Length: 163
Image 1 (cartoon, rainbow, N blue to C red):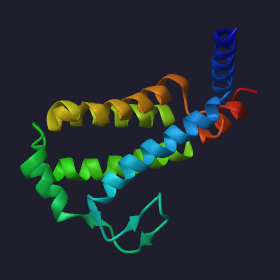
Image 2: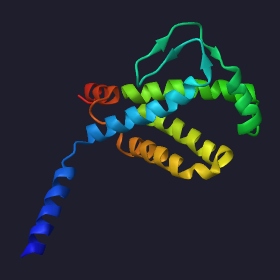
Image 3: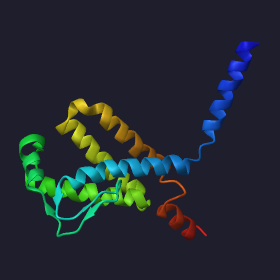
């Protein structure tokens, strides 16, 4: 009899978690992955800063940080692209795509772009960091497969044009 109660309790907990709305899971995933990439992008830029987590900001003319070029030249060493070009592209991508994911606009395209960036980092820069990159890839793949959820501009645009 005791085992039957335990099984019922486990089933009840599972049923409660299965009721979690997808929009909530997607929103948490979108905010989290956007914060990770945005914060990385902020390390590559000086002058204009906005911390999307704390809300702190600094006004000024944005420019590429010298440390960003140094990292791409000395540590990351990507093939086929100059350190300056790679730093500029990464700084742009780590600001633009997280913002798009955060507001839920062109979410799948942006998730694909960041997934390609994640795979590049994993394969060419930090191959031992697969646990971290695996988590990033999981969130990005979820957004690619299921979309941004109902609390997203993509959802509202799709509803407007599907009528």
